[in-house]
Image 1 (cartoon, one colour):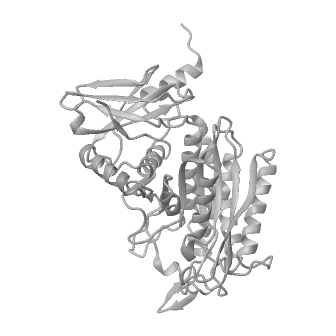
Image 2 (tube, helix red, strand yellow):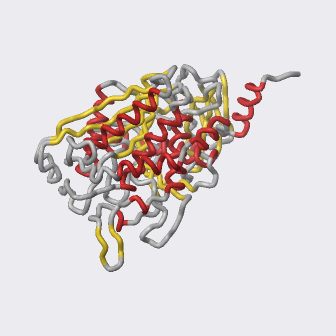
Image 3 (tube, helix red, strand yellow):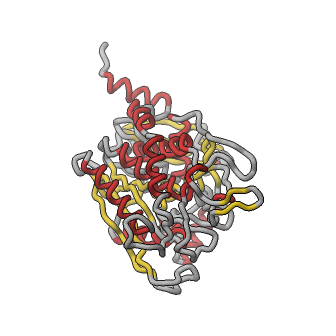
Length: 448
């Protein structure tokens, strides 16, 4: 009996429970360390990219930087038959909005959209920050090269566009340069609102902020570990009655660590371990570093899934520092401190995550669960257009990752006999004919 190669590949994907498309390995290989190095150097050479810095000069300040970023996206678009829609998105932030806005400023983001072929209004976003700063957040004239924070994240988004623009995907991908991060997350706020007003269906936001340092101030040198910060549940539950209902549901049924951002973090983890097993993704169950926030937060605030990807070991002598030498320590976020092989690895983590998500069907909107006082778990979900099948996942309640799964086709409900509902958490993902999976949807209704 002869079986088509495509059928063998799909069966292989389903049996081993992982996406193993050779295309993903090609994407990893295509990420260029040399191009990342050149782009970080170019961004650092603008002197300062402070949000309130010069916008007229062609060689210095944030104006010159954002024009160069836009021109890079436009060049990439020409090389893929104008496959990117490139534009500025901006909003005015008035003096006195907070203590770091000492004059009116137009916060300008640079956007490049690669439209999906099947789900053009579904978006996976990779962002990096354009702006930089020194010790005084209101000093917008001193040199602030911002090589690691955050030219690396911005260069990563540009490089991802270069690589992924050579392919077509079912969902849209956005390569995004955000401004105003150091002054109060204003670029993210403006763009998240723009996306909401445009009724975008955002699959997830991968905020890359500092992806180029391997030598931590803690003395650890580590070129394989990176952190994935994600909040537990969305914070857009503004209706007091809804807040009470959701809190009560989580108390009795679980879900306090299973919000949409947490599922996105798990997806990055699984995809990385599948295709880049040498890497050590470290999921951190927190919005961001202790008491701090990055440019994924404004998206979280509006109910979108968003995470922060960054280095595991920071060096604080190189962050938000005036360039100087004190007691033999060279302070400042300068080019020579960036480790580009590591920056390449984290850029590859982003590209394969976006390629995988953009190749998958949407996740189920509604997943119901039941089976109380039974030695089984019942799940039911809505039909998803474009899904060949579905994957039911379950894990121990103390496990950070999904450990068990079962694939099904032509059904939208299942009873897992012998799997006691009390002992596990459950979820459902859509699976495309090509084997790619959506994010996992945690149950959001109870079956009676």
